Length: 460
Image 1 (cartoon, rainbow, N blue to C red):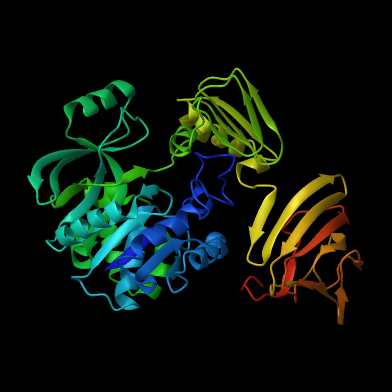
Image 2 (cartoon, rainbow, N blue to C red):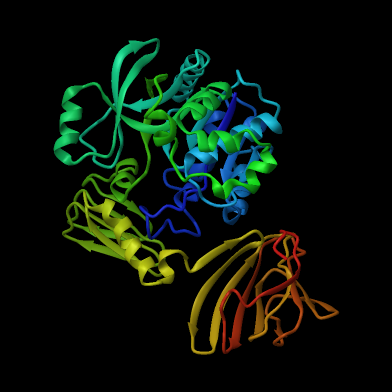
């Protein structure tokens, strides 16, 4: 079996913690590990790391590598989509990779999973996976349904038909319903939430593409390399619309374990532990006479007085306060921020790079101040800036600094000046993280004022 994990989504529903630069699959919600790392770990009882394929994009490459190392699955394969084209083209690309590069045959099962769900316990999940594998070998398109715990309007639904082995045939798929319709589904008793996970053999998948989505099927007949080149020409369509809702082979298996797609702050509240008053608290928070509320802080004290059924989420640049039950509208907020060109819609003040991270600490006309952290053994590109000079002050570790042809070591409480239009490089040759304060001066301080000459991460 090959496991395909889809980890390219940008994510807007958990703003402000999840943003385009750092979507929810890389967040740590209910564990010390990210949701992606947890997803990989769930499958390791049934496959080797080398049978796992992560589909993402180049902007998230370093996040994926870090999470694979955490999951002890660095041998997993990473596929970079040339651009976002939804789940059906992404799965087709992964299927072609499995055949062309990994040597998979038509009768091998491919299990497809999102990267950003909470599922536990693993033992119950694996039992459902094994059932799905058996059903997929019968040339079925296997979906995994979740027994509803209430009339949720944020999920799609699967209408179950007649019993089939471990599950049921599928009569229909239903889009996210309104409240009244969702209540009728729960009352009917034969509807499941759609988990977004699938299992099928490679041969079955390609046959269903040929029947129901010929445009993707024709592209998938080319080699993996040729598919990459023509990827942008494929229709942007989900696997649900492309195959599942049209196929006569679909069955659903009720998932035996707890499942939550963490699709809203209400869902975050549900998975976090509560105090005696029903409050879920993370960070430096002080609730007084509060009940059934979420308070999550990152950078300052959050105090709540007399709150009930309220969600409060704070980062160093955004605070969201919402009524419970209304958090699905966060995506509307993000859409408004994007329409206004607001930085907050896409970027945190801390941005992660292959070499470490930087945090914007302050800025104004003609200056910007950052804290830069470089992991041991890493280095920034050899670069220059046309419009700014830089001052570097080392506050922890030792820096190896190249300025034109000169190399020097800069230690704690020492500084160095980088003139405008001068080639330079910053490296961490030590065993602990290098931390510096960078002060930029110039008339233009945008991140695109970088000319790279050499770069070990392929960005030059």
